Image 1 (cartoon, helix red, strand yellow):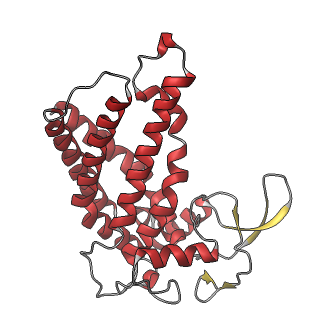
Image 2: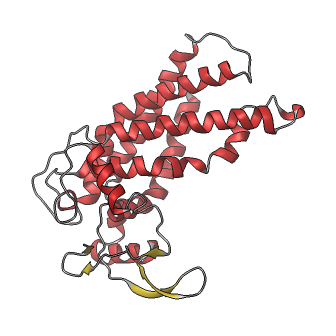
Image 3: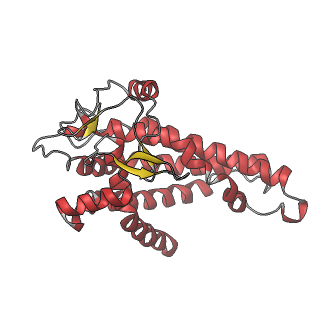
Length: 276
C-alpha cells in the first residue's frame, strides 16, 4: 500500500509539471494555431518560416488566460492518474497469485510478465478513459467556448489501447532479445529494466500515431470547435481518422513542439487560426 501511495504522489507531481506541455501538444494536435508563422532559423542555420514553438505558444496562452490557463483539464487528469495507478496495482497483485512459475530470463517468463502488465494497463486505461476524455475536452474547450457538449464517451479508447499494447509487447520482446543475445553471460540475469534503457526511446515513435488518433477521436463531433469543421472532419470511426491523417501526411502532427515546419501545400488562415 505504501508503494502504491508513493507511486500516486510521484505520478501526481509529474502530471502537474508536465501538464502545460500536454495542453499545448493537444491544441496543436487538433490544428489550433493562434499565432502566424514567423521567420526563424532551422538546425542548420538556414532562414525558414516556422510555426511558434512551445514557449511562444505558452506565452500566448498566459497572455489570454493567465498562468492558470496552462492548467486547463488538470483536475480530471489527476483523477485519471490516481485511479489508474490504484487499478494497475490491484490487478497486478491479483495476477501474481494466478500465474504459473517460469524460469527467470526465459521467453515464457517474459511472456507471463508482459501479459500481466498488459492486462493491468488495459484495465487501468478502460476505467480511466472517461476522465481522459474529460481532460481533452476541457483543453479543447479553450479554442471556442460552447455551453453544451457531450462529456462521457468511449471514443478514442480502441486506438489508445492498441498503441499501449503494441508498444508494450514490442519493447519487451526487443528487451528480451537484447538481454539474451547482445549482453554477455555475466550480466544476463538482470531483469528487463536495464534493457528498457535501449528500447524505451522507441515507445513514443511506436505509439504516437495511436495517441494522436485517440485524442482527435475523443473530441471529434462532440460540440466543441476543435472537433468540428473547419478544424476537423467528422470521422465515423477511428480508422477513418487514421486514414485521413495518413493521406494528408499528418500522422506526426504535434509530435514536436520545437522547430515546427510549415505544412506543405497549406495556407494559414488568420481569422480561423488554422491551416487549410
